[in-house]
Every structure is written in structure tokens, then in C-alpha cells.
Length: 193
Figure 1 (cartoon, one colour):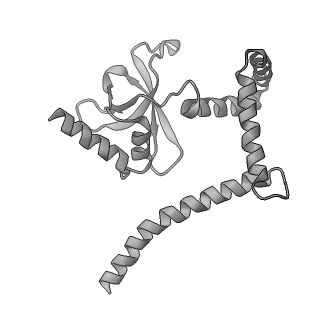
Figure 2 (figure 1 turned 180 degrees about the horizontal axis):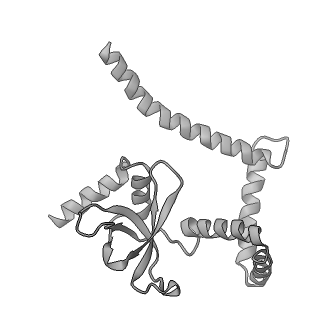
Figure 3 (figure 1 turned 45 degrees about the horizontal axis):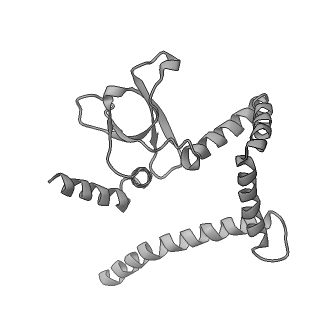
């Protein structure tokens, strides 16, 4: 009976992530495809992807850069809309834009000398604008959530980490169980020995 339970659990570990991933992708596809209410399955998805790409091409030209700037400055004048727009824009730019912000993985000693550290990503290397010249801004993501904390810590308590930012982000968000960071750590360890 124990062997059957072990086989079931092993099958669950293999099947569940695949099923959840396929379900999320299918639901996202269905949602995007349904935006335009076209009768051909998949046409709404393709039209949406092509439209977003065309907007990117148009927004990249010098002629339309001024128009985009005027639209953004108009949005910046509306109190609540400005908050939603700028937060969304900054978040997308941090992950996929030209101004990526999560590319400096670090460990932070929250209590100097204790040995305990938290993994984060430097998002701003100078806080002079807040009168904190020796501080940096470190974003610390939470495990199993799309949330985190922004810490303002003395730069002396921050130490750069080796490894890819995406692997380290996956490591933190997974609660330390993602394999990517472990592979990097083994490679770093073997390089230093």
C-alpha cells in the first residue's frame, strides 16, 4: 500500500505542474481570444498579438515618440489614473523593458553580524533624492506570491550574488525549492575549488 501511495505522489508531482501550466496557458489564450469576439478560434489571439506588436513598432519611431509623450503627460495629470498607469508601466519596464531593474541580485544582512541574510534585487543604487546618500533600494520578493517588500538599507549591508536574476527570482518565489539557483550555486562552488 505504501508503494502505491508513493507512486501516486510521484505521479502528482509530475502531473500537477504540467496540468496547471496547460490550464493557465489555455485560460489566458481563451481570454485573449475572446476579447474581439471573432468567430474563428484563435483569430482574436493572433489579432491581439499582431496589434500589440504593431503598437510597439509605431511607438518606437521618432515621429510617434512625441505623441506617446503627450499622451503620457496627459495621463500624469489625472490623480488615480496616474498611479495605476505609472505603476503598471514601471513594473513592466522593470521586467521586460529597456530599463530592467531586477538585474542586480544581492543578499542583505538585515541584522549585521547575525549571519542571516535575505535575497533581493537592487532597484536603485542611489537614494540621494531622499537625503540617504549611503543607502540603496532593494526589492525583496515574497515566496509563493506576486508581492514583496522594498527595503532601504545601507549599501554596506548589501552583497552581490552570482547567478542569473531570473533563476534567483524563481528560487525566492518558490520558497527556495527551484532548481535553477541550485545549479548555479554548484557551478560557482566548483569554479572556486
